[in-house]
Length: 272
Image (tube, rainbow, N blue to C red; front, side):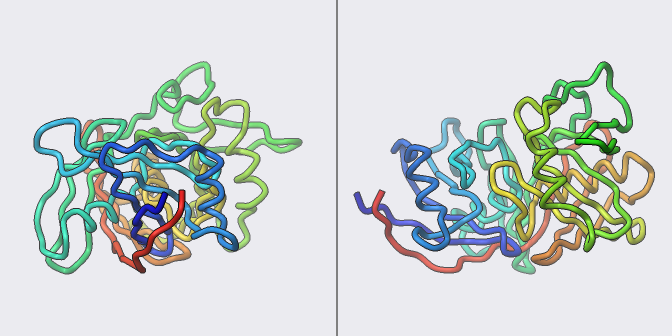
């Protein structure tokens, strides 16, 4: 069956977006085939748009990783969805997803801002196996102990503070931590270098995907744990391999907002 799609990206974190109406998403093996960058379309996530389930929402969206697993939230993907359904003009939207609803704004400067979630730091919210909530945790990986901080933004994140992300073992340590036994539902693993209170550099090993050029919720996770640790200001510029995102968090009990580009690359049809 031929299905129309839109290829989009946020800082090189790329997506195939399908306006499915009420149609069921493809099975995991079909998603894996579509995600292949040599024999399929190629993407980091498939964004499956359905009719909203509540009044006032513009769309209900689901997120599927390249391995066919379903994710709870995607910051760059949410911005692309807002741009696609909202068009090019500025304005406000409500987006519905598995975790509830998020507000989005199409800014006058062409960027898109989206409300991600109220951060949760209790280990059970990720889940992360720990005896009690703490500022940071020691996790044994092979013969080494790694210090990390955890936060849920609707999806699970761990953040490591490093001196230089260029030399950080993202591929090896990120992969080991993503599937570590203390993360029963796996996790997104961020490696953060603090430049000053308003600027950080970040690389993220995404759950079910691997390292991507940008991870929106990963940027939010790093900014939030950095602010909570006293390293960062409420508004942070996050430099990723694909470009820059801006994260704003006004503190405990308030949602994180993420701002950045949302770009349409091309449109096409595919057999599913």
